[in-house]
Length: 233
Image (tube, rainbow, N blue to C red; front, side):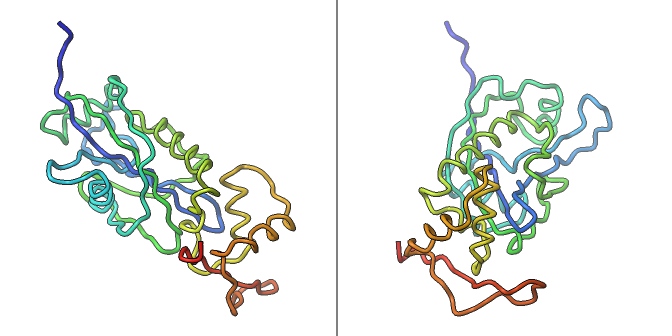
């Protein structure tokens, strides 16, 4: 007979943050007391088991808040991860033994990506998060469990849905310039865009609304500000 094993379900949140310095991802540091190189806790995505009485979307919001104190974040489910060997390294197993009652049970996780403007959110560690920080996307090192793979999948989803789902505006301030919008597109899509064509296409979008306002406190010529109004889609 095939081996049987109890199954747990969790959520993991890949929260991307953006400002003029670039695109970042939110990571937590596992809280732990070990000083052994083999079992020292590592960085990971914010995630935890769901409760019996909650749905997945509710769990994602709760877990993110419990670990980072961020709330009201745009979160969208993108993929489930169920490799039976998700937790195989000694460091991962040792850390789970310190925070879970049943550390050896198999866990399938549902991934959510989140989008925020960095100027609007300041995370603070809580629960089993010993620390929390925004990390440069291209400087993320080895993460716990299979979280590097989850991060990669989340970024690919962001690239695919950036234009079709109008999600780029979740990463921008409520009032933004077209230069900021273009810079975001170029960073996420990893390619240069023609300025004239980009602006021409944006100005055809009914949901991108020009404001009778300009930037303030800048050294260069102030640019016009725009806002995103989804009801005009």
